[in-house]
Structures are given as structure tokens and as C-alpha cells.
Image (cartoon, rainbow, N blue to C red; front, side, top):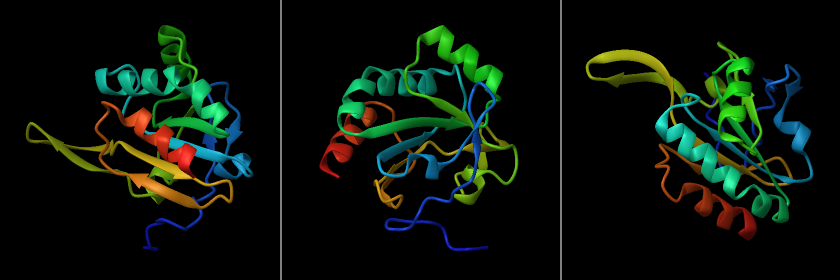
Length: 157
């Protein structure tokens, strides 16, 4: 298994799928900063709050020349419903079921809850510089105040 990408490394350029079915890759954001926030599942309390927080700050991220992209394993049609239900402004993308970007980053992993073992997304955020290299990583994110903290880091980059 290859080394895990870290600070200073390029984000693996693995395609994701937008809600309308188009392909999108980290390299598509070359020349601007990018915040990729990976979250477990659409329309669950923590994930909804996280997406709403990034949406509330979307204009501030744009002024900081920073693109946003929320990523989960949910299918594109579910993303469309999630966006419509909550009026989300931060774009979303679906990661491949197997061999996707979250697999390459090793944040799609075995989890345990109430004695049940299952595969799930570790809530993780990457701040990527305009050069395409990882500038900062937040692992096992706690949602409260996270989007504002990421915005400050993006402004400082």
C-alpha cells in the first residue's frame, strides 16, 4: 500500500461524480484553493449541519478564492434531494463505491457502533492550495465551528 498523502503532497486526482452525473477531479480546481470535506451520509444530523455551515460561509470562501466540495459515498440522486431539501450552496460529489478518492486517502474505513462493524467515512477535511498540494488536514472532525475554522485557514493560505 502506498504512503498516505499528507501535507505538501498533491491530492490524488481521482474522479468523483457530481449530482448531475458529470465527472469532477481535484485537478479541475487548479489555480485556486480547494476545501474538500468528506462526510459520512446525506441527510443525517451532523452531516446536514456541516453542509449547512459550509453553505452559510460559501460567499466568504468564494471571496477567499477557495472552492468548496463536499464528498460522500451517497449516489448523485441522493445528493440532488439533499441539496434541494436544505438549499445547499456548497457543491457535492459522490465518491466511487470502491477504489475511490476516500479509499486512496484511507478515510473510508472500518467503523464500529454499538457492537456493529461496518464500512464508513471518517469525517475529514482537506485544504488544498492553488498549487494542488495539501496545505492542511482536519481528521475526525467535530462539526461545531469547523466551517469557520476552515475558512480562517483558507484566508491565511
